[in-house]
Image 1 (cartoon, rainbow, N blue to C red):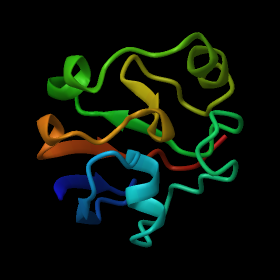
Image 2 (image 1 turned 180 degrees about the horizontal axis):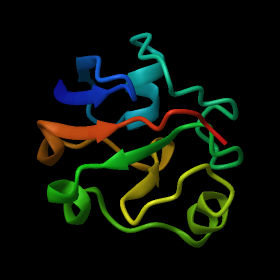
Image 3 (image 1 turned 90 degrees about the horizontal axis):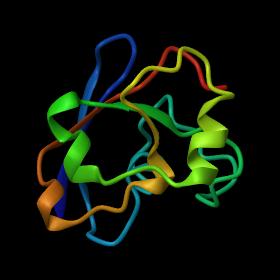
Length: 106
């Protein structure tokens, strides 16, 4: 299990144990973290799992695919650290990952 910290737009913090191999989005949805919808189930088709990755973690979560880049163009309040949480695979190296949730999705 890997601890991931999700911070809602209102400041509420959730520290969740997520199985390695799952996505950051699945970790949120399966643990009732408000603010991540994951409408497409993690298929990189909807952008309803938009998060802001803490800058200290950007290199460790890996790069964005072309499909993710295209979907991110559709999100509200795009920032340089915006990612689709369905595209971030949880690994042991992400122990302590911090992501912030936007005020609204798409």
